[in-house]
Length: 277
Image 1: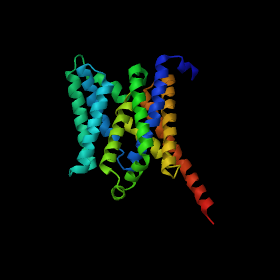
Image 2: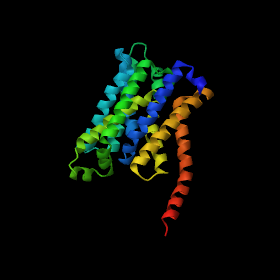
Image 3: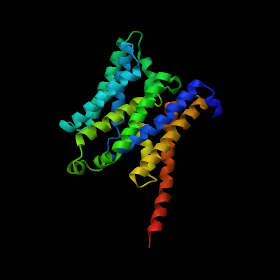
Image 4: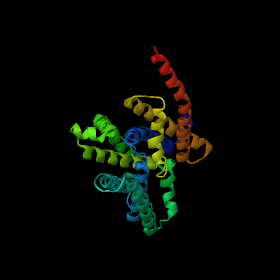
């Protein structure tokens, strides 16, 4: 590990990995609970249009991706809640529109090509710049602050929207808050795992944690720990084995899920025996 810390780009990469490992599963816990596991994928495709817009206008792709993905997340929530279109159809519209917009705009950008988008599609954590790291840190802090301040209200909404309405909670605002927070998380994670794999980091650690825990808070905290372990472990493995860091991170997270499936059986059996008279 000390060898890795000797390089500036690896120090930036490790910091970004830790921030992503904390933020993505924290938001993913609410998304999984609300059965919107593919929301991250949909927003990720829209963020691709934002990245291409950044190249076209000569501005930072991360910043334009933030703006476009937030607008896309708000659009999908409004379509889902107000229109007659189901959540799956609204996500499909984002998939198609995001990919088409990204390919179209990058073709119009000076010197741009589809190859330019590869590092954003599959992750290129070694190329994280100081500006990228500042943006990632600020957005990760914003995401974790939202989870800390509105966690109880979001929990009620994710459990049952009708109960949330009856309790007087601002359901529309909270739904938009989840969508916008998910959009910010996608942009945070796109330099680490890539836009095509970002949803995995929001879902797999949560699914792994659910095999071992019972309470919502315990699930979230364990999933954040698993997220950090997967991102740091994947990044370290990618450095030594020379493979794509995004793929290594996702495969390590999936390996953790496989182990939790087996371990979860023993945990549940132990709980059953303890509660038996």
